Amino acid sequence: MQVIIGQGVAKVLDSGHPNFKKGDLVWGMTGWEEYSLITTTDYLFKIEHTDVPLSYYTGILGMPGMTAYAGFYEICTPKKGEYVFVSAASGAVGQLVGQFAKLMGCHVVGSAGSKEKVDLLKNKLGFDEAFNYKEEHDLDAALKRSVILLIARYCPEGIDIYFENVGGKMLDAVLLNMRNHGRIAVCGMMSQYNLDKPEGVKNLTRLIYNKVRMEGFRVFEYYPQYSQFLNIVLPSIREGKITYVEDIAEGLESGPAALVGLYSGLNIGKQLVVVARE
Amino acid sequence: MQVIIGQGVAKVLDSGHPNFKKGDLVWGMTGWEEYSLITTTDYLFKIEHTDVPLSYYTGILGMPGMTAYAGFYEICTPKKGEYVFVSAASGAVGQLVGQFAKLMGCHVVGSAGSKEKVDLLKNKLGFDEAFNYKEEHDLDAALKRSVILLIARYCPEGIDIYFENVGGKMLDAVLLNMRNHGRIAVCGMMSQYNLDKPEGVKNLTRLIYNKVRMEGFRVFEYYPQYSQFLNIVLPSIREGKITYVEDIAEGLESGPAALVGLYSGLNIGKQLVVVARE
Image (cartoon, rainbow over all chains, first blue to last red):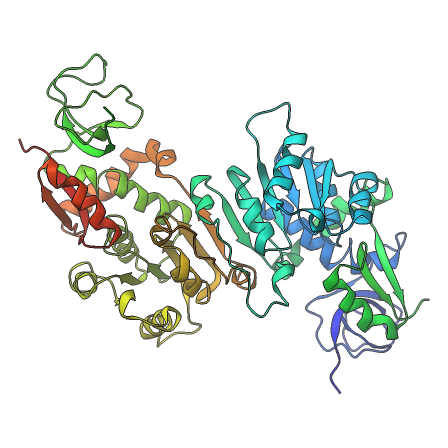
């Protein structure tokens, strides 16, 4: 039998590893199953702080949180006052990027795929502006409108930082709106994964004209910075400066439907499946 | 009358600027004309070293040289032993990038559009491997073959540094062959400029999988480093460690045909038009 693996939180029932003992709570790669045999501890972290919801360790305090941190701070080197655009902005990673950007004093625009998600971004997560890309015939115009709304008092227009979760047409629209020396952290290209042939991206010459840097990254390489990350994020959670939205499916049997739902954007916030509660 | 401007070498006949006096030789933005009125000195440099051909200041010692320098050293941060691929490799910029890479101890593959150019790359400019992209039905396979030839003794395969002059299908083929933490300096996308619609680039998800950085740049921002650049390049020219190939058209009237020829790859090496000789 093959086990599907994913990011999970678990309690150690037995351990042959000196760093983990019975009763420890851990987060990392676990199975979609009630009991898992974990044979490598490369990406397994002991949970030290339990005054926050344990589920956060699959999200804001786990891999998605580290992804937002690495992509935004390390790849994009943000500065106060810059203009940040996040696609798939209400997802596990996007909602954090937007909030990190606000904490840093940036102006933030997000895109998402429903009115509910856009409301969430604007009213709960503190984004300055957001739009529903499914309602837009012209993504470039939508983006321009949102950014212009934000920077009506300034010149020049455009995006300094794009946190890329989507790819395809969205990337093409963004490229037309990047500012000089803009940075694009390529985290994912969700719109392209289930296509037979990926859409071609046509506006890459804009990288030259506007001297834009576009960089892919994998979160695992940043795991050594996990404790540094916790020092930034835990206090912000405790002080209520960061909000985190989860979409919880109950029971292992709801897992497959929840996974499929991700690709059509049914979830609002980080999609979780609860296998067991303490 | 509108004057077409371009990179040229000229002699000062009269000057109202304290840094330039009658008889000085200069390089920078001049007109396609016998006598030019230059009203800005932002990108105008006085020629201090005349023991090398003056024409070099339109190429290896001018804007194309600085472009190769900025893109290769500053954007790509090369290391000894890395695998470098250069498209449009026999052009003014490409031939220098390949030679800089060899001086640095890298392995270099180039692509060009004719057998003559490929011979030039391999036999005169010191490229380790080169291929004629016009002869290849499958660019990806051609690239793989060339790179594998080079690194048969090593693992893993692939390109660490791509100096991008071409765009389109070539970029797509390169993306499939980039190594982890590869760097792409986006200097130009020659294949795309004269298309009604640019070709779409389909393999950008590879930026994520292989953690690749892709960065556009403009040479003008690096002009403050010109004297530092001369300190590196002039000795290499004098010692014969760098070769430079020019394609010289005689007379201003041959200019338009030479320009058109660039877009179909008729030139071999840097295309020059001689307006006047001393």
